[in-house]
Amino acid sequence: MHKGDLILTPAGLWHEHGHEGKGPVVWLDALDLPMVYSMEASYAIEGPSQNARADLDASQTKYRRAGLVPLESLSLKARPAYPQIRYPWVDVREALNALEKGTPKDAAVQLAYVNPETGAPCLPTLGFSAQLLRDGLDFSPRPRSASAVMHVIEGRGESEIDGVTLKWSEGDTVAIPTHAQIKHRASNGNAYLFHVDDAPTQRALGFYQEF
Image (tube, rainbow, N blue to C red):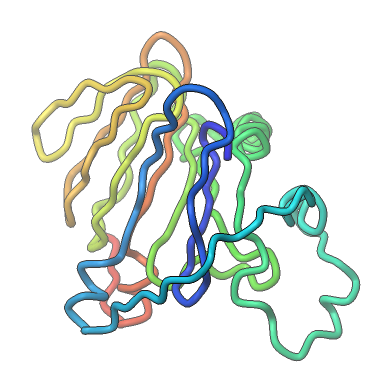
């Protein structure tokens, strides 16, 4: 786990947290628990402590480059639900910088985190994306029915959300309600943002909208 990495802890899989470095570790948890609780589907089974292997994870071996998958994937009858658990920020940042060079100035420089075997969202209930916000350029995404949380990985700037202006900098987290009118602006250099939303759930239920 490094700064900016997305690490999945999918339902039905064992997980635990450990700290092997020095000093405190802080991360942002994005959970679908309110919905799971309301469906009375939440449970946990305790187990023995796991031994973390020294092996490289799938993001460093099987799914190192977009558009490439292991050859045996072509013969799989069923795609694995969670083939990649870790999405390293160093690779995402590099991809955003490359995308920025070919993206019009009025368009979003934004990448979605997906299952590399299927192209679907990497979790069925939550959507994740990363965005490069260009210095000094306003960006206004379309209002939509999904709610979201925005976390600032690098940079500083401000967001106007339904007429309220919020200044933000590295490490800050901003909640974005449904149907909101939004305008983002980076200042003093580009900003790198991480977004999590409930759009996959809304799409599955048939009421996701953009306006």
